[in-house]
Image (tube, rainbow, N blue to C red; front, side, top):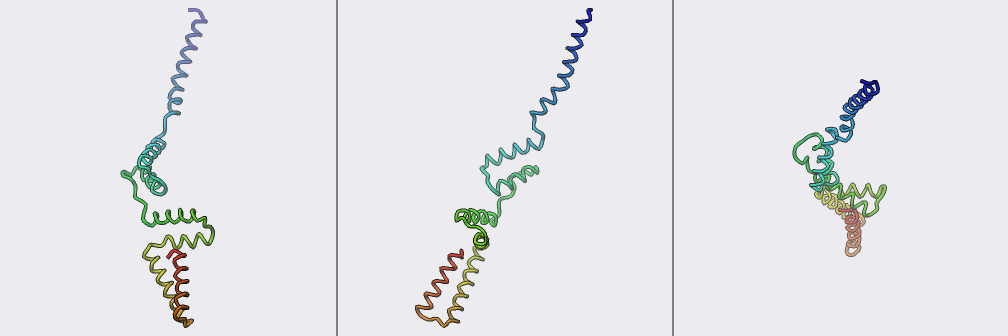
Length: 153
């Protein structure tokens, strides 16, 4: 056998061996690892269920941990907080004004009612301390009532 033919055969065998070694790496680069596959699957499920915001985050955490089911639902408090945040953004509130709004808005409705009642009692006490009567008293209490309503009570 001529020397050139042997070298050609050796080169071909060497090339086949190199391809065989490199092939799994090339294929593996295109495949997703277990976490990436789980992430892709969970994202698809969340999209199918049209989940958004905190509810999607809860679902994704539970799904990525391998928990079966939908994860837990967003609590009433979290829903209220998200709604208050939307309202504050809509009103372009910032700083102390936003904090005050959020503080009042995030209170459960029962506490909001109680706070409004307490504010009105305070208004009535101040009207009595000022010895307001008749129309003056009614105007004062109406102003108080409007302030309580404006504060979110």
